[in-house]
Image (tube, rainbow, N blue to C red; front, side, top):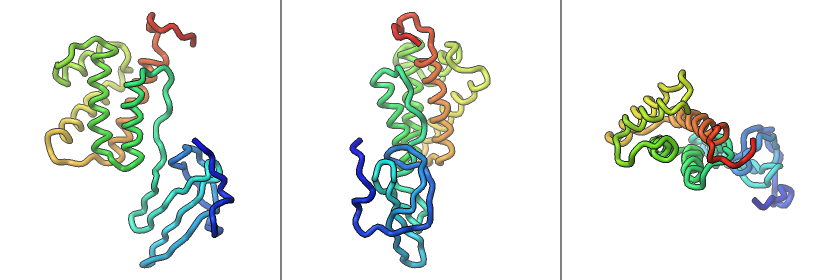
Length: 195
């Protein structure tokens, strides 16, 4: 990503100090550089990141940060398609699209059961979960998370209900753990990379 110099923004103001995770670069840094507007007694601010030089907007009406922080971490050794879907979940949460994140997490679980564990394509989701539980990739005390993703995914897939941020973030944390076990810390004999 091309770094923009924050000093080149025009008519910057000094605002009250703000520290948060920036949506563009993922760094947690503090800044006082930005723009301020007060409309209808709401505090509307745009801070400029001192690390990447890009703006982050804080809407006082909705108390929302745009872009939001990128949650989850980059995971080594992921195949391109798995990485793409994982990052789609992360981006959906970042943009506040929590139902999309929940449904995509469910889709990724199905794919992992087929791709990494050997389940047959076209089986039902409960069967995919059982394959994953028996695979050794899912830590024993976190198997209930597979059921939680199944239940939440069923509800969002078959009913008109929206996911909450805390649910999609919890799903992401479990997916991150699962992918780390499957790809970064796996003793897969086909893996030719060295630890």
